[in-house]
Amino acid sequence: MLRVRGLSLRYPNGKLALLDFALTVEAGELVVVLGGNGSGKSTLLKCITRTLKPNAGEIWLGNTNLCVLEGEKLRRARLELAMIWQQASLVRRSSVLTNVATGALGRHSTLRTVFGGLPQSELAAARGYLGDVGLTDLAAQRAGTLSGGQAQRVAIARSLAQRPRVLLADEPVASLDPEASEDIMRLLQRLARSERLAVLCVLHQVELAYSYADRVIGIRDGRIAFDLPRAEVSRDAVRRLYISEAA
Amino acid sequence: MSVVARPQATDPRAGGGWGSALTIAMRCVLILIGIGVAIQTFIVVEARPQDLITGIHGMADLIWRAIPPDFSKLPAAFWPTLQTVDIALFGTLVGIIIALPLALLAAANMTPSRFAYYAARGIIGFTRAVPDLVWALLFVTAVGLGPFPGGLALGVHSVGMLGRLFAETIEQMDMAPIHALQLTGARRLQVFGHGIIPTILPSLLGISLYRLDENIRSSLVLGFVGAGGIGFQLLTAMNLFQYQEVSLLLIIIFVVVLTAERISAALRERLA
Image 1 (cartoon, rainbow over the protein chains, first blue to last red):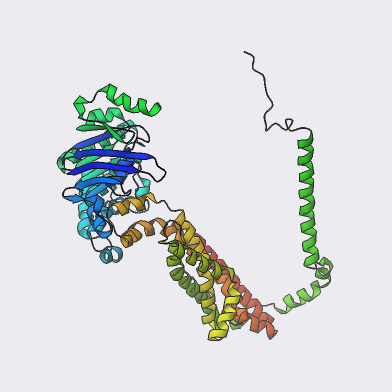
Image 2: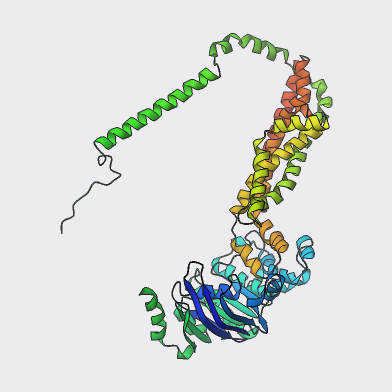
């Protein structure tokens, strides 16, 4: 589903962020990326969403190479690619339901959605996605009133409304308590299975990776340190990712 | 190991000697400068408090002749009052319509180019720098006497005031939800309609209501230069020594200003 080949990025200041990076995430799979601060995890996600343009490499989403797309073609390709962040990034004054439904904006005409509001079909679908994340009761509530865990669930529902094939998550539980973190990871795992989503999730919590990932990718200094099924990832290999950072 | 207490930099005893003397000298100089500035204002404005005391009879005579207010002129005052309020409403609406797109161009986080940024900032700065009274004189020359030049003057001046505040609001907006919407594949206008507008609308409405409140006060003054409304009525009544009508008009102005202020404050409170 998502294939990255030979991805390299050097920042204008000369710092190497990614070098010859390669990974594959299949539909229904939850892959966790582990690594120290500044190792290139978030840069990898920014390259995949094309917020950053890599210097070299290919990013295949199905049969589409995102690296060669610009403008309208890139926008259309992004419809298949949803992203959630550490902060839920919701429009605080809009209702929970509206926030979820805005995930589908890109699939509808500009005039209709700007002047006619969100289509009824999308609002109905948004209720369904809220049901998927267990928040149907909060549909009418303002997003600004939600707790961190609830807001993150709404952000996930918004990404589902986008009807993506790939879900990218950049430290989605970093600002949540342990219980809420487990909830979110369980939800991502369930959605990967039930919606056949390819989920690529950057984490700092090693234990969560051991509990929920199908595969774990270790990243150090912009290079892949290991890419293994969860059961084969040794504690030593993970520890070395962070020792390298300290050194 | 013994712990020796060292004087902290914030300890007043620490900066003794020359440092302390210099600080005291600087304070004395600043106080003298302050007193000097205050005294020169009295000289420049030719302040003569004794004139106020000797002239109090004239003021008292004027007030005496203004009592009681001539309430028989109340129906005739209705139309100029409506004109005054509508000049302010018109000016505020024109200001909002022009200021919003200008503010988007003048906000560093939204502008499509540096040229658009500086051009928008230039227009906003110019319309704000020229006082509304000057704009009114210009428009009276262009379109003649009446409420229309008053509305235009307030509109143009409001572009400057609203444009600057709108741009600042947009620049201070939380960009995370906007970036999130952009990455869903939403188009620019969709991001504007469903991300930017809901985020900043309460602030924009609050600023606009405050501007309307200000414009109502300004529209009273604009009448003095022929831009219609109750201000023009007031000037005419004063020139004709109709002081009882003047006092009635002043009561109306007081009620209009106070009502507008209370409504504006209540609405802004609801939006907060």
